[in-house]
Length: 319
Image (cartoon, rainbow, N blue to C red; front, side, top):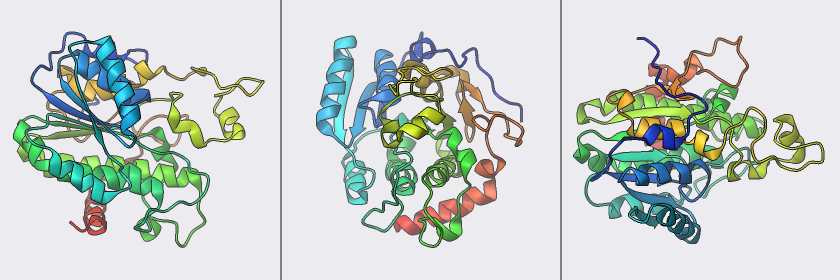
């Protein structure tokens, strides 16, 4: 299976990728679409004619984002719906309220590097709960709508942080091992990729494709839990401790959204499924000799591990 490349690069923007694409009559959901790369993903999809629903925890922020998108594109069809991925009852209410086909689902929202162990009301570690289980519940609940589209695409934003940890099935929620913020985040992002692999296999007959991606480093609200030392470590602040809008080697939000938009809408990857992308191309295997910030870990694409995660996910969600 040859590695997939496209005409686009790490420097391409979402606008570059969506140019010439017509999404008229198609419907999309973008979780976390009120800011950052979620907002730029929604902007690109709406500019191509798609009806876009911003699924957000804070509806007021969602309405401000929707107004921004409509100001940018007066004809844009942008809707706002409340979705708290840590609240499974709320996720179920969201999916139950969806009617008609869904052509594009962008699982974009997330939380990162919580400094202390935080659990949901279910007792689940919060990053695993939000980044993986919440999106899994959303995706599963929208299966019929995705199937009705005939050629739906599921796009899940993962991270190069998946290289920091496989899924530790024996202790998913850090009840037996010491909590470590990056291990927890990395585990959740590995789970996102593995679930994508399982979806690609199980839903192919429904005409549904599923792919995951690393968007690159982008300064957004995702970094709100990082302390000054961590920000300095990743080069995100200057010598005076001021946050840099675009640190060296990082991307703008418009560039960060490009790979999401590619997988959500570009004919360049039509029919492609079960892959992990970065910089608008399929990622190469991480062999332990790279920079530790690119490539995909073999454990994240392993089909047997994906099947195990699928079963465990259904068990936890009570499906």
